Length: 110
Image 1 (cartoon, rainbow, N blue to C red):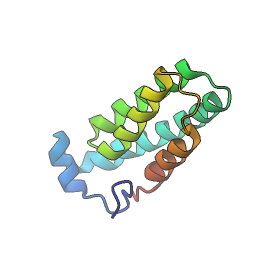
Image 2 (image 1 turned 90 degrees about the vertical axis):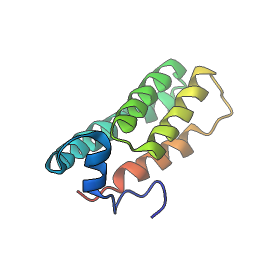
Image 3 (image 1 turned 180 degrees about the vertical axis):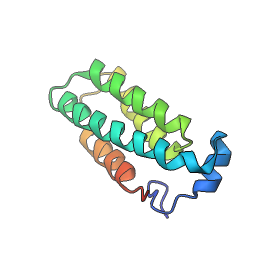
Image 4 (image 1 turned 30 degrees about the vertical axis):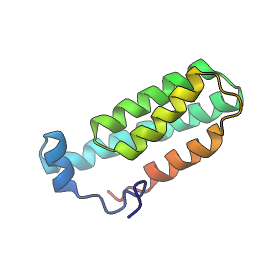
């Protein structure tokens, strides 16, 4: 399992890490996936429009949500997007990072 492939995530282990009962994990992950996929659509448009402040804001939100769920690889990807956007780095490949984030989020099997 690559660090961005969450298809074999251990629900019991994740529940223990974040301090909730395992029965709550599918709901938490489902909410995270749904909200994140919506955010990715907004993020894609912001990247196309080169709206760096909006990119940073959306990436920051995804970063925090992923970190709260101990999805550290996703959090790190979103962090990188946020930092580059704050620098208004026009040479950075935002779309590649966005695609990696999307694949990671879509890899969950819940």
